[in-house]
Image (cartoon, rainbow, N blue to C red; front, side, top):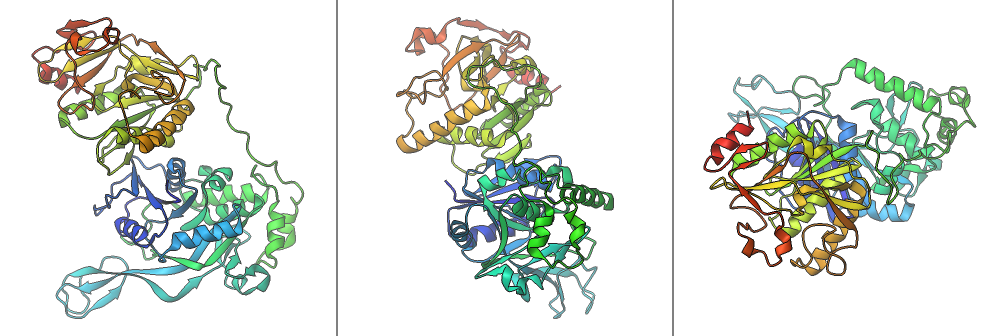
Length: 571
């Protein structure tokens, strides 16, 4: 398990690959990178395929805050660090932050010392000697008129080190060099700070969840440093700059093609600031145990602030914590109204691309807007896409399912395989109980070579639906056991069909049948074997209801016309 997850939200970032490579090169602990491609694939391409890199893709931007929260939700590390996609890091940054966290305590947010990143220069392609510091793309070399090209530098600038930040009366971000020199705010290698840039902060994953992550009501961007600072201090904790390590951030303030990658309008910033002022000045954050007046008093004197600006609400801090959303307890009946449904899709991306694409398109049509988390071994454009660059196998499949469950925020989850065509009626089902695994046994198998269609009653993972929490517990235990002991057929693939100690747990399973069937396409790349005769089953009860046909009910004739039939699915 990783000790640290570096969370990188990214949109149209030219230096994303370089940032990821920098993290991997300078990490000394068990550190992973979780990248969220927020509405755009990297440009230029070239994101490292690495076992310690997870990639999520959103075809439509959800915003920097939401992307960071999503990355944190799928992390299983003890610590998380948000990082902008145009930064470099100190060698061993992770070890230094983790060691400090264990020294300071779990309620402390850390900011590495901030430096400015000199990422590149513009130079003359004709080598006339002209060089210009990073900025918008020049029309031409100003010395000889030749073409300009980028030359990477990628190192911190000298003399630009920052350890303290604050916000003013309007809650606008400000640098606070004078605070870093005050002895009452400095404790050895740590400087207490009101705010931060927002480009990089570190805390335990549990602490991030306790603080509610990043408040998406602010909008995508703006006031992030104020939010992190206020949450850290007003919750009863602290925020400090760790002078033992650093990060270097590339600033883009010159406009043109050297500006902020997210589309940000002045109205968006005004909205974020208005929301922020109302939230903090009026002590409305429900996670607070201290009012804003306490924070201002702690850092007093704060330039531009007077006591009465926040003191009017002193003593009126909101209750601690936020009541969690109600959830069904074990054995209770799930409510059909208002339940959130999601899909976890997993694929090794092997096989006939026509089949795989047809299945993905059918899944999009059938799910009727339910959230989809796709976990694949190569990038695909389907819902939120997480890429695991590891070898195909049984354990890999279990890891894919677990990762998708970690990333989903649905109460009820349907598992979806890449070579199954799902009927919309499949997703109408609501589990009656949240302590039972449910299998849709209305599935027909179709041979991709002959179009032969076959049905028998069987419980298979591709038809599984259950409470997300129940599935999470099972697949966490399954992955851990397979990692430790390896996989055997006696263990089985399907949750709830094998009892412990042979199986993973003793949770019950049950069946349902959707009004119309799903279609399981059998081809040369299926992970499980194909069986087209009853004598291929050791247990006759495993193929009850055997029925062979030339067509699938509701789906049409498949025999001797599989290619034509599949093409019809895309119409």
